[in-house]
Each structure stands twice: as structure tokens, then as C-alpha cells.
Length: 91
Image 1: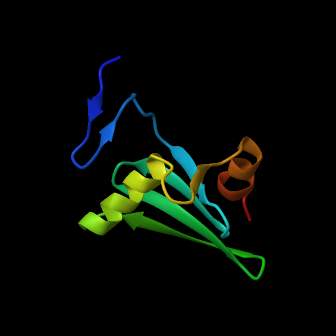
Image 2: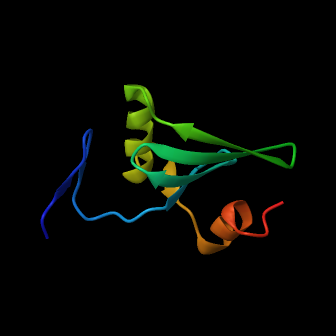
């Protein structure tokens, strides 16, 4: 399989979007829409808040790279978690 090159990182396989990640140890969940855009859902006192982040600066781009490569404490989300935080019936 040919490697795929993006503007700021190297992936060893073709990646389809959206991708879903969570920050282990925190209540933060991510829907990565492409290599520059993601939705972050945070849970504070049982209430979900979401915001869309468009990476325009290099540190934000590195954050997306870390999420996609599952570096630091970023982990893949389970199907049940995806449905709860990003499903159609989300509160």
C-alpha cells in the first residue's frame, strides 16, 4: 500500500473521515471531519458542550495529527460512545 502524504504529517494508510477519538482520563470526545476541522464535545457537571474547531495555526494542526495517530492519551472511540456523543438523538 502506498503511503499517503498530507501537508503536515505522514499516514501509513488511507484515512476516511469522519474519525472519532476521545481523550482518555477526561470527558472530551472528538469527531474529526478532515485534516483541518473537528468537533469537540466536553462533558462538565453532566452537561455536554460542543464546539467546532478549524485548524488555522500549526499547534491546532499538530493536535489533529496527535488525535489521528492516537498519540498521548487520544484513543479510538467505541460505537456506543460515538452514538451517545455524536449520534442523531444527541441532546
